[in-house]
Image (tube, rainbow, N blue to C red; front, side, top):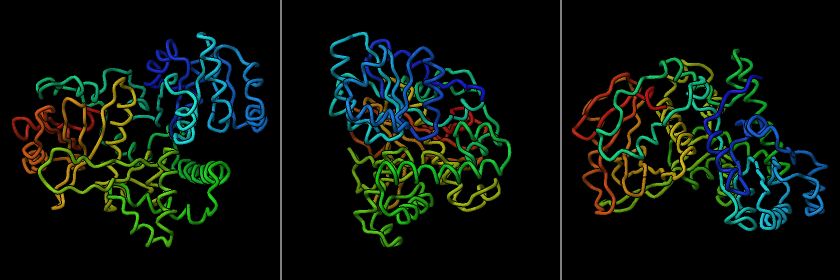
Length: 415
């Protein structure tokens, strides 16, 4: 398999210079092991998928660590939790020691870091390919980094080149960004991959490691959540529909979030003079996997199946989240929905400013597309935080000023 460069490489390599422990987390099969093997060829590599290594590390972690040099990678590190305290002692005693801890379960990996390695660890997250990565486009300043610096709408490069065709975008939405999917050419291969992936994570992660007892219940929820993409997460309704207790439903959702299968977008409710919905929205970490679970198997079903708006919104959010993971100081993402139904798909909180964004799965926009952004900008009252401009991201190919400080941008120019 030919290696495709990852945009995270520069950030990851830089952190190893001054940080004794790097935690690299992300969705299973997003390419963590491949990245580490490529970028750190001279480091020792140990995977705790091996039962032998796992048992040795947990039985006598101090003795286990003595076998390895100053630069060592421990993959699936969450499976050897007894190792973390000993790593702390080693890096405190020897400033030359460097470790990379990699894993696909944020909750278990990070809980151990919080307990044992606080202040000594830097977190990096690797996601499946962004569209530009998959097309081998050389890394440059991301759109989100540009937004972070912009003080006015004139600071945005409105002449950004449209890097991707409509068909490339639709294919990326349909099949997602898993590295192995990127290599496959036949539809049958891709379907088989998603089927194997579903089986693997349920059997390997949720049954064997996370100790989910009722796989039938869990699998029902896992599939049902695919159809909730882009919707408010109502635990009560979900529990009633599936015949699962609300306590179990929340537990399973938390496991899926921790293992990077889904993410929850929290509502923004500060400094707005209106009643707001405070329930999170649910999204997938890969739209290809979501489409597979929904039985969306071709472009026609994707575009005309009635769910394209939600899936497109999910995909755009994912592309921006992938850009966010590359930044040193990362903004927070939110959405807004009022009790009367007014909604904004995304609020990017840069602390000193907010950028409201609407995501439209259409090829045309008009002044009505800016209505909710205008409402937010008028309703938001905080002298310490500015809302300098708003954006509409859509499937067209032209930059369109909708108002003096609200502009519509082609999605092909910002991903």
